[in-house]
Image (cartoon, rainbow over the protein chains, first blue to last red):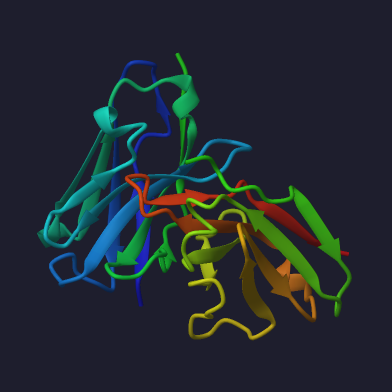
Length: 120
Length: 111
């Protein structure tokens, strides 16, 4: 059974760096083809894909946010970490992590999400 | 790549059928047969309901079906049940550096 859970601060100040952790079970990020992605949803707006990391450490980023995003993995801990620098109130959103199989074109398992508010 | 367009809300009575549309462009929905649909009950993890336009993951009811015509994909739910009340999101692979685009979501109310 694949499960994912996001964790991190619920409130960050403008200009600060956000660090979110996705802790998962039921699969390994050392398995060929496996990937974990991050998606966010600002209140009342569409979901937005942010980043993806593959088992071989290949990384993909949304072009619009690439300069501010870093995705890393810790295979031994079954965790994926997303950092977002220079946070702004427009980055207020629910952040989700999700499982993806390379060669497919969807996310088959998602976490419940974590709401991050950016406010001074 | 702009977000996909979905109606904000749809409703139907138990037993009826509803269809949710998802309109993109020739760069995403129209270009690939890689549209997926997700069901989201608030506070829970989104659930994959349809992938590759019309395929259902194991365990998803056959009351859920997907289709596509041109730049518009559709999710149809037949035999509406109270448990179907949720938010539904569509997504399309884009083949560009923005790998996926999503819709704004549709709130389904079962009357």
